[in-house]
Picture 1 (cartoon, rainbow, N blue to C red):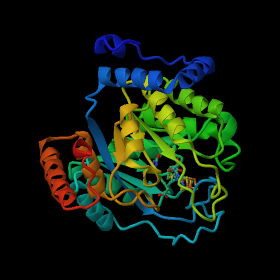
Picture 2: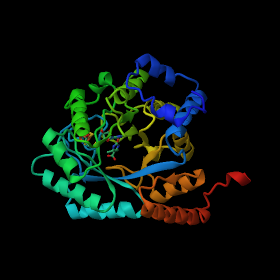
Picture 3: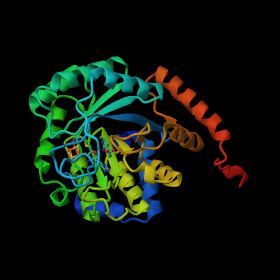
Picture 4: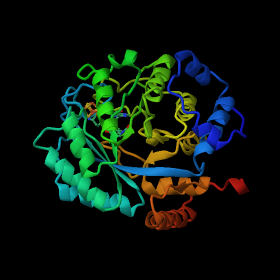
Length: 357
Ligand code: SAM
Ligand code: DTB
Ligand code: SF4
């Protein structure tokens, strides 16, 4: 695809019929050709120097009945994680205020459940309404939903529902046995039918093959509508989980995954998700070049560490990236955060001035 293809041509070109051979051919291109193609598609649909920032909060931690082999919160494994009951609504709203203050535009609340229970739903709905009233976008990830729960969440004003397919249908059964791929697709269908936006992606580094990586992206891209948000996680290896000693992902292969996601789903936000603590700045810069345009922002994911917010702002400043603003107010907050980060960076001995090197 050439750099001169117009954005109108690209938007009318959304595809939902990708084959394994086609997607593997994208992966197998020389790295520079793949990145050029992904960046070209990216520029046809987005401002290439804007990245959306979301903050995560675990609203109910640990003791999950599911057996996802990657997950520190599964009750099947002993990871030493301290279990918590559902947080109080007030506490969640305080955390949302903190996220807004550091410049986040979306607040994502996650619960270690197989599915929400009837007794928890009223609290969850209060959380959605409260966060929404703070002028933040709302996102939840609560496991499997039924149609009634989905309608209630949509009615409360939930913008996004996160439910990952995680990997290809073929590899999935080696990772999770307590929930089927079909159930995941059903939940995504309910979310779409209720008019909410879908956030769905997966994880690299679980021992999957190239076919599995391509297979996951095909599942997502061949949905009737592309998920608006596609989180690509690099496995965070947590001691006590069955995948604690999994082999590292080749950083370039991770970047390839982001690039192919960008090409297949040109209008979606592709999120450079979990695993950034183990990535250097150069790798993250390549991720943005490949078309990733969203991150989790704030020093914690759900239970594991994420880069400090000021470090991210410093990186953005060095790359000339600005956080995607939801509204003017958010822009001012971001600007203040960037300026503060720059002041701190100037005082830091670690600052590497490429221009004078
Ligand atoms: N329990 C709900 C569910 O699974 O649908 C919501 C929370 S769950 C922690 C959300 C997603 O986090 C999982 O689908 C998985 O993709 C990701 N995740 C969990 N543990 C991870 C890890 N150690 N490394 C990378 N991603 C992880
Ligand atoms: C997603 O794809 N990644 C996020 C979010 N959606 C819910 C979760 C990452 C969790 C990483 C491990 C942890 O912090 O517990
Ligand atoms: Fe439970 Fe979600 Fe972790 Fe699976 S990924 S064990 S469903 S919290």
